[in-house]
Image (cartoon, rainbow, N blue to C red):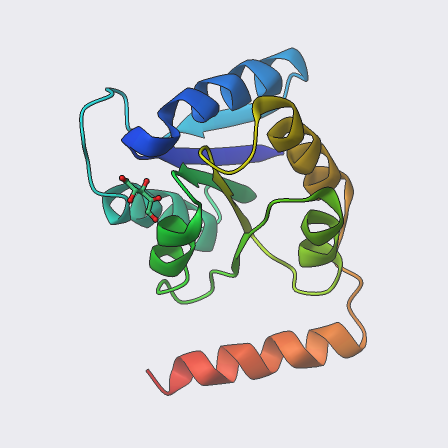
Length: 147
Ligand code: RB5
């Protein structure tokens, strides 16, 4: 499995913690920036991560900003992306099982390091349940065709 990572300045410290965590678990990743702490714009990092996911260069993406909200709004503009902003393990699990979320968004100013890593763990362990959820995902894809 390979994960694309992205953050703005508001999420860069948590992204560094996530990198250490993924390294410790020997999970492959690609860091799409930001690489410096100065103020940047979150859509510039949501875009490469989202594109790598839809182009199947990676399996999943994780985006971090101050709240996770801006990243999720931006990433969800990319056709085929289902980005879920999450602050608890249960929602993380459900976002995979029911919504087949392919990007997890976290807020560095919302969740602490340990909770964030626990959320990531729950998200990576869960898998899409298909069945009636597949039908709903297909309806979401239909909505994208209207754009
Ligand atoms: C940056 O100050 C902040 O707006 C950004 O990280 C994010 O929280 C936006 O949703």
